[in-house]
Image (cartoon, rainbow over all chains, first blue to last red; front, top):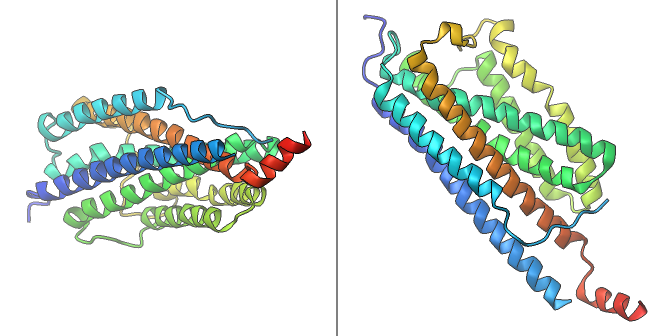
Length: 48
Length: 236
């Protein structure tokens, strides 16, 4: 036991992958929701 | 009291998101391939370059929501309610990522994925408190009640933010104390700061877009149904 953590790059890749993956998915869903809401508002406004 | 939102796409949030992606690409490259491994934690310490910026920005997003809650209760402008919703949603996303990154870092260094340590427990309380406020907003249909109730709940839940920050000083904790530039080598704090700005830009862009979405929904909620609008037109 040296008291030094050996290896562990798989944990590093997992942390980065989950973080950037989640941020990318959130960004895409946000833009999709925004587009849908914009077109819904436009269609309801033209319906009036 | 009610502010309308037009359907044009704003440019600034997309510029901020682009800047954020650039900063994160540079900072993560530096953190993963250029910065040296830490003496005791070795390669695993590289998680810090994404974990600490996530923590700072999660608390910042929640603090932004707290400020929006106070302003909304004072002026009743729904622009601030939309910003509150945006701040909480992005804050919850970052707080969730913070807990996941922390668990991934804890396994190789502490030997466990999770421990009911003061810092971890108070962060989990923060995550679930603000997740609850988002759920509350989904269930309340009246925009005025929803705005007031969620603003009050945000102010109450915000009490946990200083507790999260000071928990490592107030109680015995497995989690390390906050570092300062004086205690961190420049090879460590360059990727840390670049990634912190990267997540800050990304978070700001997301909050701006999410607030816009909330404003558009609000406009849709308060718009009279087509029949009523026609009748109002005839009366006018």
